[in-house]
Each structure stands twice: as C-alpha cells, then as structure tokens.
Image (cartoon, rainbow, N blue to C red):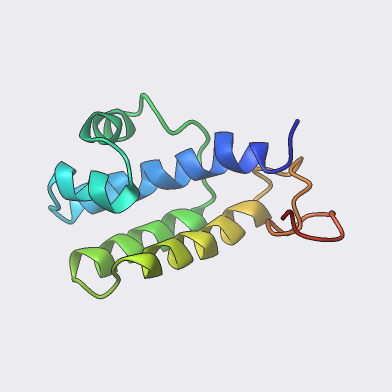
Length: 116
C-alpha cells in the first residue's frame, strides 16, 4: 500500500464523518459543514446517514471531533486553523491503531523521514 493510504482511506473519512455528525448536532447547516470540510452537501448526507466514513474512531478521537465541532459552531476556529485541529485529531486516531500499516513519518509511524 502506498504511504499514507491508510490515512486517506480510513482515518480521514472517519474523522470527517464524526465532524459532520457533530457539527450537525451543533445545528450547523449542511452547506456550511460541507464548506468547512471541503466536500459536497451530498457527501455530508452520506456521512450523517452512515453510508460513508467507514471505520469507527476511538473514544478520545470522537470526543476531540465533538469539541472541535462546538468550537467551529461558536466561531472560535476558522479557516486554516481547522486543518491544524484535524491534524491533531489524526494523531489521536493513529494511536488507536487505525492506519497502523501506514509508514508515513508525518503520521507518526516507522518511516525515518517525512515525504516530500
């Protein structure tokens, strides 16, 4: 499998699902959720219905998604800062074992140096 494939195919969809569900619980419109996550409203509908997003995240990562959703809804996190926060959630999710086969140093596994 290519480097970071587990992250792209398992972790990020699971994080996006949790964020979409959590932001909807914060009463954000699906159009805003889609814009925040850089996807379509149809994708948000699939995340919320459970048709997209695959793997379940560990409780710590789910809670981090819920907290981030509240901060986004409250206007406390915007723009590029959201990507940084999602990266932090990704680190939590990696520690749960999801994406364990990903050799990317950026994603905290065995590779000696990051990809260029």
